[in-house]
Image (cartoon, rainbow, N blue to C red; front, side):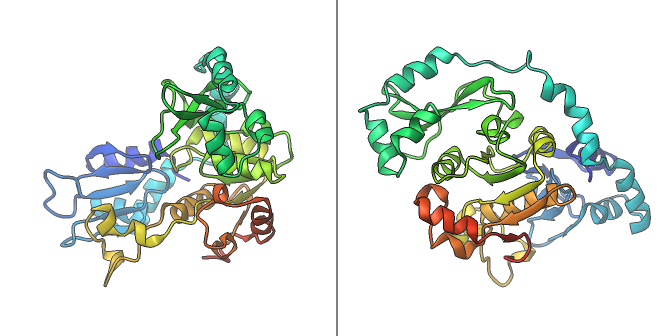
Length: 334
């Protein structure tokens, strides 16, 4: 695999200018047409797959194709350049070992704030809201979930792999607005990983803390949640240390909510004659698979097992159990 640093180096060697980065992509000026101002090409930070969204250009392909075209060389030469930039997942783990085991550079959040929010939870609007979504008092207590009356927000503590309190995920009670604590180093951990690692080598991977809490409540404590719809090198290193099986249980997003028109972006050459949507849950499942297919056995809850629901948070215990009982080896549902 080529890591993010390797991809960026190859872009530099190919004279491809990175204008800015998103959680998943490098956003670049496309070298294959006269792209001088607004960048129109994305390059995946995970895989190097590229696409130009200018309909007059439509260039797309894998990292080898990008290097070959940009450097005006043959595919075999481009392959050797990419191969030279490759690192194995073991090398990524080795490079990050010091950071993972080290704790003195982890931002430590004030435990007193978590305690105060937890004390404010019983009988509050926050507790009423969470119980209305199917959470029990026992689950809220287990995860130290609290309530901020001043912000009218639910507060869920986040810990490092070692169990150090790193911050809180805050979410408004009446709207989908997040109020995460400043300094939260989400890329260095997975929600609940410090507990989940104690329950064997299989990990159920979900998108959000609420999903993880609901799955735990249904009797599956070996669950961890990602942050911001991506897998970082730090998270990959943690997972590779304690996991040999991954069960993907991501959001069942409605594709029609994620068409190019809804996302207000140009239609790509992949969307002809019309865009069928780019659901982020499906993209995340494929990212997880591509990241760990060489080191873990990967299963996935098939979309048909969701009973039309969006995610685990919307399910009850029986629905979660039935969904997990329906898991198949990755690839059979796509």
